[in-house]
Image (cartoon, rainbow, N blue to C red):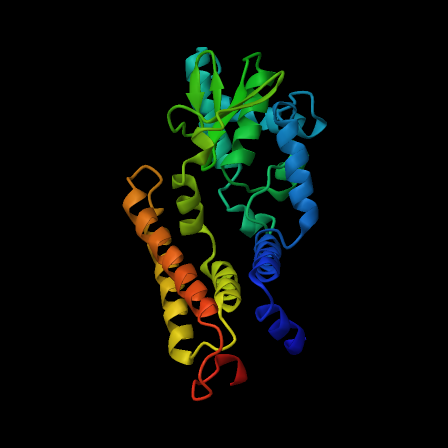
Length: 285
């Protein structure tokens, strides 16, 4: 295996770099989705996202009964539709404790069905929004899911709930998912996702990228420089994405420059050709 990898490292750029990108993509995918089946199910659920909040779902019946008891306890049996939104949000936040998808499902992101989220008992913003929209629909309110890559919430003719973050990037409608693709290019949500994702998983991707950037004749010092640039980029991205509402483009820019610097250093090593026999080869240690 080591001999094969060394041959790949010494092969022409038009062979070497596509192979390296394929390896990095494969490792990244497995880090994000250790169970690929959940990725396929997520894609399927996103295509039918407006159907997830089905008010006729049998799993929802006991939840609706709980909600009626919740309203009775709070003395809000007769309320306006605007007040109902507040009560539904309070109920869902209490009924479904918040947990990241990698804590519940083991993957970076998963959009559950109603039976799935109720069986697990905890979820993040998208599962909570699915349940809130289903309860509102069962009460006769036209509710739909909207959001951006960071967050999912619910919109109705009477207002929004579940933590709206301004103008949504995508909206679920009866005809399908409407997406503002230009705004999807915003790097802010990516930085936010990196900031909250488990760092140990990110380090697996980082170490993979580092090994792929190494050139067979690079020295330990050069390898250390590449690793330092990538670690600094990861730190900057995590710091930049801490607060989804705060400006983060400065940190993203500096992180991008560090990554470009690492790639440039690697390319420079690759273009130097054969090195002196006195050079300490990283791959031989």
